[in-house]
Image (cartoon, rainbow, N blue to C red):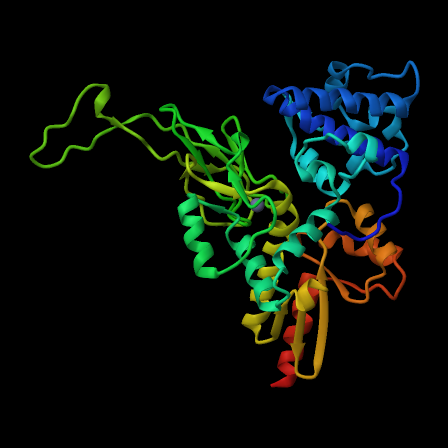
Length: 400
Ligand SMILES: [Zn+2]
């Protein structure tokens, strides 16, 4: 597997990568010795970074520290990004949304000696570019642009399926190849066990991946997908009586009810997700969701929006050299969508990469525009979804 060359991480970034791994491993420590060992190894990385006599010095102390602000760890006190120093990675021993966000932007290799033997999922220890590069390699196997686009669209449009049989059917219709890892059973943290012992899951209304279930709260792990829900308390229903059939009585008359959600945030209206049975359902793994499906949902939204306006739009040209080629008359625009939670991280990337395509911030991230424009050289062009769409609309009008 190959990926872009990245510079050596700052000391605090190494510690951040270690605590993200430790937080993940702690959250799954009941799964076996490998996870427990991983927490111990990461405690060692922190002790080496902090020097003698500075805590945490045991896995238990580290887990306690991960329930508090990261900035309280001496090694991370040097980091001036509040996104990071204010983040809390664990709540009641479960990974927080902030932990997922940070892992997606700051997970990274810690060195051959430490990485050897780690059996963590890729998104907790690999950089986004490496996961994307591996997925791209698998999807571009045939070398044909149309196969690549079909595979990528498939993952974005079907990040979960109700069963392997349904997935096989969908795949054979689309005729696509899959990235490594493929699909897996829906993880326990994304299922709701009803009182009758039946498991359910809900697709996020934006990305369609199973939303995280914490107690009775249901929400997509990607925080810009803001719709939040609570599982409504539904009593066991009695069978409805049918004409000529006496209503049943007693416990056997009860039947399974599909749990329902109520919306708890005031955000824009979206269709209410319906509960799906989880027993046979499958979904893509976290790394593919976060690095292919989440940005893909925005890429496809923009693709549809611009196509509807009348522009000619090509997705991921030249096997993903960039995201969209938008053509209006004789004008062609090469666009890369960037959806980073940390403005600082995005700034670093753009400074290093000096992209020659125009960078587009989706509507959810347009507040980053001012900071980026102030800090980046003029040669790096940055715009927002709103501005770009209005530019294309105006040009289409001129062409008519
Ligand atoms: Zn989502």
